[in-house]
Structures are given as structure tokens and as C-alpha cells.
Image (tube, rainbow over all chains, first blue to last red; front, side, top):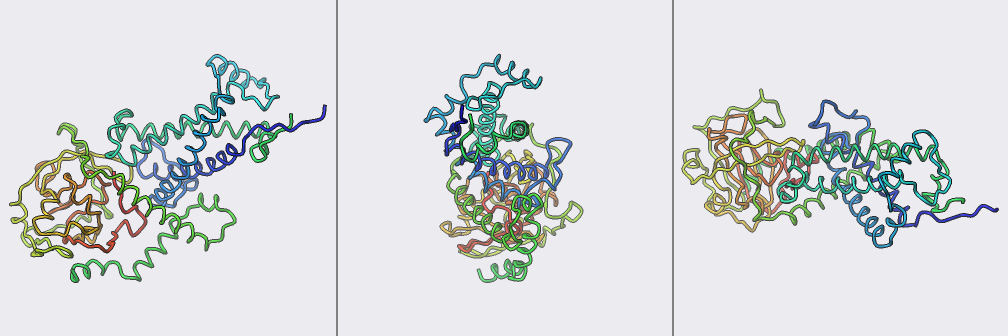
Length: 201
Length: 250
């Protein structure tokens, strides 16, 4: 049978993906520099991997890129919900199926033949990523304006609670991104599809 | 107004501004940024800095819009006061200045009707209020303290300040300077502070007087205030001129 090209990523998702990749990279590397000015834990990020040069520079990057990140995210999430993209690609996802797929992936046996369908582990990872990024926006708002957004900061332990949640959500995003990039390296033919939108099936 | 403006400006000559800007450009872009902007010539660094400065200006506007003049910062029980309360300034604690309270006079300038200087006993005689609020530092940490002093809006009205002006600027005895928007100056919790936890402000917290604003980051609160002026010309400030966001509301 002749190879056929199937469209798997709509244009809007591809654009949103790459804008998001850039925005999250800026947010995380500038965020590390901000973290370093008053570390929550007994470690700091090496200055060489941070953005901004010093606290004021890092804050400028962080509070500039937040607009790119949030606006792009809003377009993506709105599209994902209204178009049915999320429902088609990410649902349903059952905890049992996730455990099964993660276990077989760790044994190196996870089938990844049909790239048009996400397995349960992928669905869980992408859903978790979207949720964590939303948590980063919500906790970030409380850190940015703890007085103006005081009322809803109460749901996350106020200013100090939001600092920790913001950090842990960043760590979660970092972990998912590392696994995501590693998986792309293992299945390299998925990479061009994020530009062209099509994949050989 | 001229005199106040002149004393303020002497710290911000064109040459100083250029030097600060060069320093900021040098420090502003780390290896991380360079790695991300591979292929960009160094001259484009200025372009990046210009975009970032514009975004910071846009964020000033957004924060002014978000700022609710009637929303009060939360108050806490005195049992939650942070002890010891952190010291922070652009210099170390050993370099804190000692101000002679007997000689001290607060000077007023700009768009203010009654510009006579105020002595400490005159200031202490004004009606005072207390607040137990949270101080949030631009570095990330926060601490709760108790501050006592004159409501700043009362003081501005008493001296006949033009409250339709845009800015209130502060020049300090430790050569610090800053400026705030009029809306925040008139906020009910913005306070000209004489006491910290019921004691006369110790030198490290800004004797004889600081401005306390629970609706802004800590660096916006000037200590050891020498003069206050009201103006429509953007006055900037020590950290603001180096790249920290001007409005810095919380």
C-alpha cells in the first residue's frame, strides 16, 4: 500500500505549540533567576541557564512573556474546547489505561505505530501539562497582585502558598517537557509533523 | 518646585542616565538570552531592551487599571508580626545613616500650596493610625509588620497638595529616591510612618520617617524621607531608573 499523508495537527495547534514553547522557555528561565533572588529551598539555579542577567532584567522578561504565554494559551484552550480537539485527542483517559501504558512504556514495549491516536500515557501527560500551565497562570496572578487578587489567593494559601504552588507547577511542567522531548527523540518522525501537520501513515 | 526639582535632578543628570543605561544593557542580557537569540548581533540587544522597557510601561498602565483605590490590603493579628523583621536597602545594614531628629525638617515642593518645612514634633502632633499589614519584597519574600503614622492622604490634603497631579516623588537622606502614582498616594492605607511595632522607627527601618504602602512592593517605600514633591513630570526613582517596574503594585 502506498504511504499516505494524514493530517494530525491543525495549523492553529502547531502555531500555538511553538509560541507556547518559546513563551514557556522564557517564563521558566527568567523565573529561575527570580527564584534565585530569594530561594524557597536550599538550592539555586545556575545563573548560566537563567534569563535576564539580574533580578530586574528577569522580571522584565517574565512580565513581558507572560502576555505572550497567557494570550496564546487562551486561544489554544478556547480552540481546544470549542472545536472538540481536546475531546477527540485527549479523552477519554482512565487511570488504569494510563498506568498500563506507562508500565509498558517503561518496559520499552509501548506500541506507537498509529501516530494519529494518542495513547493513554500521552493523553494524561498533555492534559496534566495544560492543567499545570493554568495553575501557573492562577498562582502567578496572586504573586503579581496579592492585594488585588487577595480573595482568590485564599484558595491557594495566600501569597506564600502561591509561591510554593507556582514553583511545584513549574517543576511539573519541566518534568513533562523533558519526557516529551525525550519521546520525540525516540520517535523522531513525530518532529517534522509539528511543522507540516502531516504524518505518513 | 524649582528647588525641589533641582535637588532631585542632581542625581539624575543626562550623563548618569547614560551610564545607568549602559550598565543596565551590559547586565541585562545573560548567556541564556544570548543562547536564545543566537544569530542576533549585539546591536539588537538595544532593540530587545527597548521592547522590554515598553512592555514594562504597558504593565504600569495595566496595574493602574487593576488598582482598586477602595480595596484594602489584608490586616493581620499582631501575633503574626515577623520577628526579626528583615532589613533591606540598596546598601548594607552597617551603612544605615544616623539622622539627627532635632535638626530634621521635612521639605515639601512642587504642586503643594503650603510648602513650609515640618519639624518632627509638628509631624508627631498629627492624628495617627496603625496597621498590621504584609510587606512584599520584589525579591519574593514577604514579612508582616506593624506601622504607625499619619494617613498620607490626610497629610497631602492638610498641606494643600494638588491631588489631580499624576505623581508624588520622594527624595531621601540616604540618596534614595522613588515616586508613586497619585491614586496610591491617596489610598487609605498609604501612611507617612513614624513607628514600627509601637517604637519610634529605628534607623534601619527609616528614622525619622518612611512611607508605608501595603499596596506596593517594598522598594517603592522610601525611608529617611528628606522631601516630598507633587508633579506631573515622571520623576522615576533609584531602582526604577535601573529597570525595575515603576508601578510595582501588589
